[in-house]
Figure (spheres, rainbow, N blue to C red):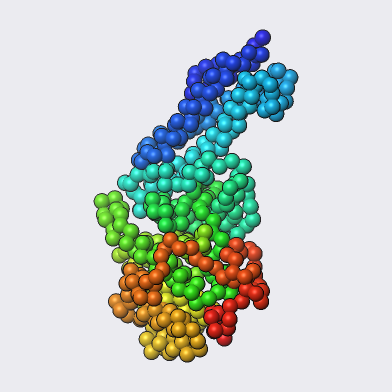
Length: 462
């Protein structure tokens, strides 16, 4: 007895529902093997824009074949008068094999969705981002685990703004952060969307270096753009205002921050035929530093551009005087170094170095004024290590950008001689020093008496 057949586009065979499923099992296995081999080959192949288009079409073809296979298996169970779940524990080996194929097909269908999304987003980024024009995209630089993950489900909202949100995406083994920008009439110039496309481009560019925040995937539709990336335990701003920590923590964080910025400032590449010697982040602040598995990672590359290009934007509070006074719009690593000095000061004192009024009146462009502020903070400190860290902040906060040391020079300071970038950041705070898992949505976390460091060692100046 036969019913209407289903054509699998990869194998070209027609499958018939019948009691004899042995031959059809072989055809389905061929379909699954072809799809698996295609993805294996795709992961390690550098792709041009045209090859991305071709690969996208091939993924769609495999997707249709896999859907055919799933439909056949489901209809076969109906034909045999059994629920599909009964195949799982069946004494019939062929039925067991069919159920295993059903699960594998669904997993590959999930992979098709994610790879399609990433190929489309990568192609758009390569076509629109000046960083990527003329370069190739290698899927193996992405999170392989995300591409093959099962049971992905939406988690809590981590943050939101006027154009989109960041929410958690969870698999059975790990969590990701999904940054979504909605393309809406309220954003007529599509600025938010173009900035996210640019950020996707930067993260693809940096994805070959596992020491940077890793992109896991992306999706691009007419209504929204999604960036899927590693999820941090917490950003450093929220951690610093909700936990107690010690001078040694700031020392480690500062070294890791300098290590990240040195790598960014020395990242070489090409835009078309034009070579660049490094990148400038342009939005240096604690909220854009994540703790990922205990290590500092720079986040939010919306304004990141090559050295020497025009600056797109940033945060006024941490921008250097030459930017806020419009003395220059040309990007230089010294501008990030100024922001690093602001961050070190904030970690030590838990305060902003300059008020909005002081920035608007350009007081921060007067070196004596900056020095007095640092001297007042230093006088209140009791820990020698904090004195040294304030001094490092002071060298970053030189009004003359040419007088500021580079991140590489700062990293070579004797204070960091014993530190190693592979050493995880040890977050001492609530619950007797356990690492924080707080997020912006979690709010403040109190510190128990057992978890407090002594007043002599705890950061935060009254």
